[in-house]
Length: 378
Length: 228
Image (cartoon, rainbow over all chains, first blue to last red; front, side, top):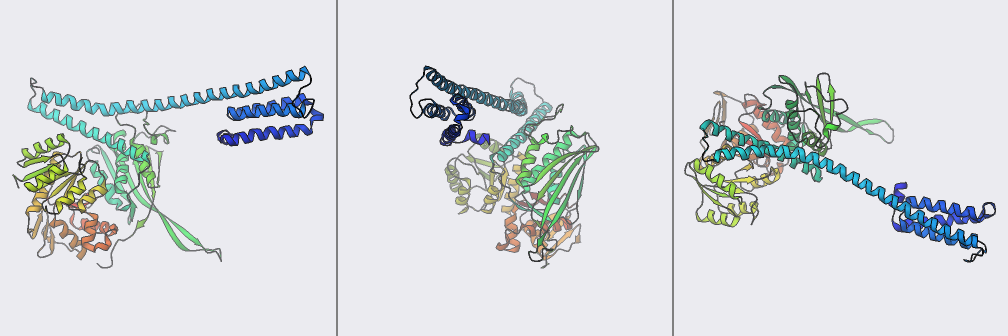
């Protein structure tokens, strides 16, 4: 509520501050026989200090001036005039006005300093994140670029005795580096698609069987030292999803598993359907009857037999540029955040858990299904 | 097929040169243009056997160029696209492009697509017997044999495989297949296509999960390959 007050517009601030001064003065006016006019001055000063802590300088200075005038008019003898009869009262009045104004100005200054400090801190955090990004990016992008430049320099150099075998190796280097570069650029583009907020899945019927085998087939070379074990539930329906995005999701997860788990272990990919029946509540009898609709969710799990994730890190792995410590191999730290972004674009969710001897990613995509397994005209 | 004349329309001079080198090293005659205007002029003054067209040109949209070409040019057009924007590719394929390649691509892939498109264009009358290793499709007898044995296909499965066999190597979009087999009212009913492709693969592929005949072009369509 305080925050709302602080952020309210200037007009509202002026209304609240003058209003509270008037209200408080009226209350004091009726109690003046018990309080005495000096105590009233302290109460009004307290009010101004509180306002200074919440509002901008102008409404507070206005309230300070108003309260000084009210105090003079209604409380200082002779009452109902702006005259002050004794030198003591004149001194008190001047002091009141000065203290109220100093209060307003000082508090405001403190708040400005605080705000500046907060902004600096925010900026420092952004800079730190930006540096992490730059470090990781410049390494991931410049390494292949360096390889391409140096390999092509060697191929071009006139005096170099580049023999046939060397030539082939250099050309292979260029090719490998270019593919790696392409992969990184692809990742960055995916990430910016997610962050732009314009990512709309292109929904079409997907045969999950085809999707999974296609991805595993594309990853054949990376999976030479692992055994993919695919278990797809019988009679799995077709699902309405974006084939390209889901392909990327599975690709990243399976590729990650192949990178960070020991050789000769299994990577287990499972797909099944979860159907939840939604019953129709009959308003007359209040009995749940007749199935109204069914919500279907595709559940994909990718399990590995690696070391698992450090406890407490299972949430953070999806953060952008997050990298596990002591992890050897490359990558921009974008793979899993892309996975999360694409899954969420489908209104789905992804979770990661450690299991005995490994880790398990579970993806849930709630979507339409189609169960046409045979067609009548055939 | 060798010595076929190929026109490359791409605004990047580096890509243009590399394509020319690749094509010339493989006994094609290559010519190139850096703008849509220049490309259309070259195409009409000396009609090539195949055009490689980049969708991203400085002076005109590649889709417009394709449509202008298709008013009179009947030979294959191969589209180059810098991003894997499926809608863009499908749009071009449905407006007369024969095939597409997403940059970056391997030279081998480019040459395979060029050859396959030229082959398709050369075969005015399709050989009624399409020989794909273990698989034989006889379009005259309407029979399909796997390792010499007749296999039973439903009417729709046969329609599907004969469409593929007639256009070996060419990507056929989901919409195209749905329209040809079930009619224009069915172009959004891709679930039928998924089911029949899966059924057909079970009947003709050695391992239906690792198809070698009917290949998936992610998000775009399917492609029939007679040989590896």
